Length: 176
Image (cartoon, rainbow, N blue to C red; front, side, top):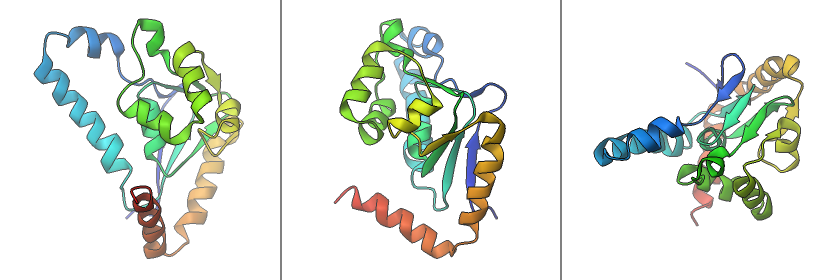
C-alpha cells in the first residue's frame, strides 16, 4: 500500500473550495441537504484527512480558495508553487470563511494574517503563503511535482510505526 499520500490538483487549480452560489444560495431553502453536504465535507477534511494514519502532503499547484484551506490544514504539511493563488473570497460575496475554514485559519495563521486575508478577501501567492506559515515552503511550479515526490520518497523510507506514532502524538497533544 501507499506509504505517503500526496493531494494535488489538476490543471490550474489545487481546489477552488465550495461553489458558494450553489452551496449557499441553492440550498438556502433545503436545510436537510445543506446539513448533509456540510457533514460530508467536514468529515473527510476535518477527521478522515487529519487523522489518516500515514503522512499526507498537500502539493498546491494552483488556485487554492476557501474550503481548500481546510484541505491544506488537514494535511500534515504543505508545499506550494510560488505561482499558486490563495484566497478567502467569501467576504467579497457577503459571506465569511466559516466552519472548517475558520478552524484552518485559527490553527495555521497568525491572528493578524487570518483577519487581514479573511476581512479583505485579497489573494496571495505561494511565496506569501510560506512567509505567513500557511505552507511549509514554496518552489517554482515547474519543480513542484519533483520536489514533493522527493520529500514523499524520503518519508516513505522511515519506519511506518514511527511515522504513525509521530502523527498521533502531535495531534493528540493539541487536545491536552
